[in-house]
Amino acid sequence: MIQVRNLTKKYGQNTVVKGLTFTIEKGRIYGFLGPNGAGKTTTLNMLTGCLAPTEGEIIINGHDIFEEPEEAKRAIGYLPEQPPLYLDMTPYEYLCFVAEAKGVERGEIDDAVRKVMEETHIIDMGGRLIRNLSKGYRQRVGIAQAMLGNPDLIILDEPTVGLDPKQIIEIRDLISKLGENHTVLLSSHILAEVSAICDYVMIISKGRLVAADTLENIRRSQVKENSVSITVRAPQAKVEELLDKIDGIVKFDMTAVPGVDEVWDVVIDVDEGIDIRERLFTEFASAGLPLRKLSSAEPSLEEVFLKLTSEDEAAGEHERDMAFEEDADTETDKTAEAPAYANYEEEGGDEEGEDDYYVPMFSKTDSDENDDEEGDDE
Image (cartoon, rainbow, N blue to C red; front, side, top):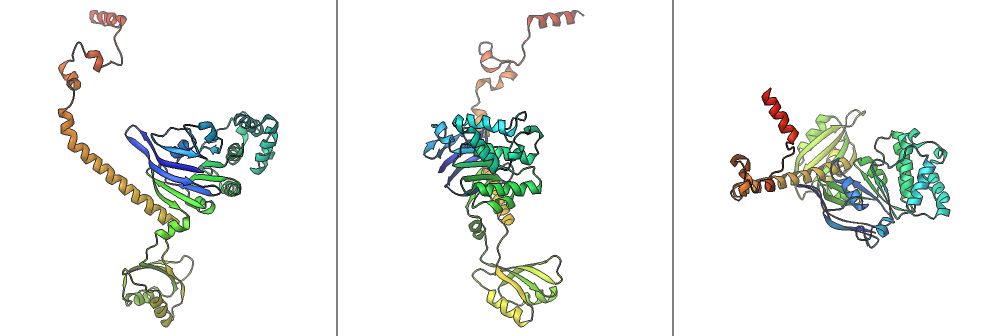
């Protein structure tokens, strides 16, 4: 449905999006996940044709969004982070205006508007001014305008920012329902939101795509084969004593389970290539210490997210250090090759080429000169 190849956006020397390549297929809810400042909104603005990339291409249903913008954009409904609402209109008036702008047939506008208002549960608010609606209802109006024209793909940029818990749950339910008939691309930095709604996740950090898969596969890819997790009910000293005598254990970390006496979550690191799960079960059973859980240690989504984004940040810092070293190496050469007018200020300038190299921000007028002369006389 959407193919993105080598998408890059630069502002001067600052590269905000760096060579993104991915594919969005029909019938899924995609999560576009990343920390604040990762480049999510910039990428979405390019996907919707609102911003031109520095490099790369975006193909939507076979149409290049910059070569054939009208054909490509017909497939997209977009809700920016700040909904583009006219506050002096009612939701019904605003949605009729949007429907007409999207090219909905005039005789079908009323039915189309009422349909999206019913699906977003704002039919009772249709006659109120948008300025008097709560933020949650404004978000619903924004989603309704994205749904008009029945686009194949609906893109939502941070749709739950600033909402209260009840409104967040309602918007998430609405997005899940949208996924039944549309492909949805949801941008967020809230892990729980992406986990609750999305089928497929793309994680972006510092403008780079650092992971793209289902949440389960991403989490599984970060599981350490030489780490085991157990939950046991026993005095702390006994657990430590038993683990200390098992060969192959490199280290272990114990965390008390809140609200329960003498129940511990333990993450155990073992030597590479060793599976001690059977040994653990046998030793704890023999000691009369019941294991409540025994499995390979699986990181939480938060741990996976932090690991992926911190690794990319470290890579970015390395790149910046290398670039700095290169700049330092060439600094002498640049100085040697500097044009003659580099020392213009010191040498007083060249009368003939003066205007070629220096244009003053303010220039004296005849009146200014007269003022100066008068001031001197005074």
